[in-house]
Amino acid sequence: MTKLLEPTKADKEIEECLLAAQSFSVVAGAGSGKTTSLVTALNFLRDEFGSDLRKNGQKIVCITYTKRATAVIEERLGFDELYLVSTIHSFLWSSISRFTKDIRIALRDNLIPTHIAKAREKDNGGNSQSAQRARARVAELTAELELLDQVTTFKYDESQFSSFSKGQIGHDDVIDLAAYLISENLILQRGLGFQFPYIFVDEAQDTFDSVIAAFNTICSGEGLPMVAYFGDPMQQIYDNGAGVFDGPAGFRSIEKEENFRSATSIVALTNKLRTDIQQTPAGESALNVGSVLLTLIETEAPAGHRGRYTPEQLDQSLSKFDEALQYIGWQNNEKAKRLFLVRQMIARRLGFSLLQNLFTGVYASNKAQAEYIDGSHFLVKPFIKSLCPLIVSKQSGNNKQIVDLLREETPAFDILGINKDRPLKEMLERANSLVNDLSEMWAERPIGDILRYAKENRLCAISDRLAATLDREPRVEAYDNAIHAEEKSDWLADEFLSMSTNELLPYYGFVSDHTALSTQHGSKGEEYEDVLVVFDDIEASWNMYSFNKLLTPAAAGDGTEGQLARSRKLAYVCFSRARMNLRIFLFCQDAVAARAELVESELLDSEQVQILPSR
Ligand SMILES: Nc1ncnc2c1ncn2[C@@H]1O[C@H](COP(=O)(O)OP(=O)(O)OP(=O)(O)O)[C@@H](O)[C@H]1O
Image (cartoon, rainbow, N blue to C red):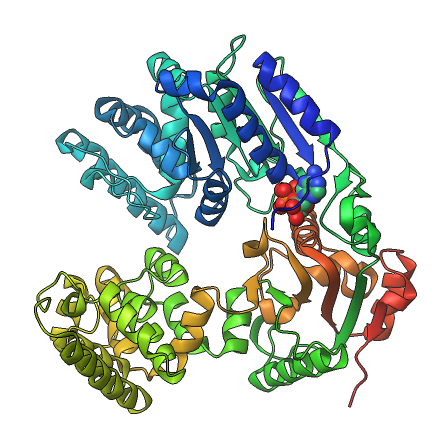
């Protein structure tokens, strides 16, 4: 059912800007309907100027922060080719990738020398590890610089790191490279400005400064092209973000003061976390008080290494979490989204800690880690795409789904594939017997055996890299980072293949977004009826944040400016995801003192703060 949208003053102002081809920035808090206004504006442009734009072969570009947001907006626009909805990385790369010569010059004259200068700053000439690493990095980059002329094409395949001499541009470098090329190259500016006369940027607070500057340069003249930013400085939760996102000279700043998402008690809390914008509940949500409740969970002072819990203390803290869930009556609230600072906290609760440790440990490169997080790493991909869904279907007795999965993902069952002439009945029987065997092996055999079975019986697509890994002997040498750093993925694979399958289903559930657990950063842009935000600084063990110091500084001590700003913004993002009911768990060491401080600070009323009774 489509929601009835209330007309807002901001939408009127946006229309005026679009008709006058004037750039603008919409600056507004959480739940104010920025994304909604963005989609409304894109539809308005289609109605007003769509046919002319189509005739000229021009498109409206809309930059989103995540691929998920891209999909949502594309759908809301009816997959119309008038729009190019894209993440910033793909948009920038598609804009510059043809300019091989210019890319080479930019790398030679700007990007690589900048990297070299940065590495030199870390070299004090001494023998410390960081100085040695910095010198090695300078040498590596200098060698890359010399090989640059031999590169015939440059590519960006979403990998995090660049290998310039192989023509590979990494995630962060794409941004710097494109921003540099656009701001230096008038032809590129004009070309982009003609092709995309309207540039829309959602979540502008987390868009890189250099990109905002580049878009502003493209749109610096009178009339089209124009740029429209939508964002909230308070929701800047990634350090690369601009925070502020003014348009080019002459832009109009548009504000929205409504909050259409959250019930009034939640808006009252989020208003207290900021002073720049104060929201008024609006629309249907203004009719609900909803509820906010913070539960203080007292734990012992950490007795482990570097201020962490000992394993026993960690167990205690996990069981207190379960007790607190019972205490607030949410142990069976399946729809409540539970937000945690770090993935390891989720892994512990869902049961994939060993996998999490492996893919964030010494054998995992940053690339391996990133691919593990999105499920695309060559070792885990067959499980995410085929084997876990097959086991889940088998467990729930869904035979039709088994056949569908096999047809979609497996060469041997493809209706146009090698077995296309075999009778259907025979294929179904074969599918059944293979999945039965798979399911029996699953409980007993290590991951390596499962993959070999899947490979032999063509149960899923197996990449060449995985096939080679399955065929080689395990490495017998003890891992030595000084010698084996380049080949560490062998040790990663060997350990993975020897593990049991126990943790694969919970990991698959999390990666496929089938669980109610999410990272706090990952909740950005989303909304849920009920939200539980979990703050345990000790378990999270991420010093960049301290929610105890943010919320109860007298009890927990003063945080650094950075810690407090980051924690405040993330808390704001998390709290503002809730439509109706917000629950917060704050682990602390002196619950009575923390409660008194919280109430005195007037962030929450006394009936909104409770202490988990000790057993
Ligand atoms: N004009 C409106 N009338 C009624 N409901 C609205 C209106 N605008 C937005 N909403 C509703 O309010 C909620 C929040 O909207 P939206 O996600 O667009 O806000 P946002 O500002 O982008 O949020 P955030 O910055 O927190 O991610 C959605 O459920 C949306 O349907």
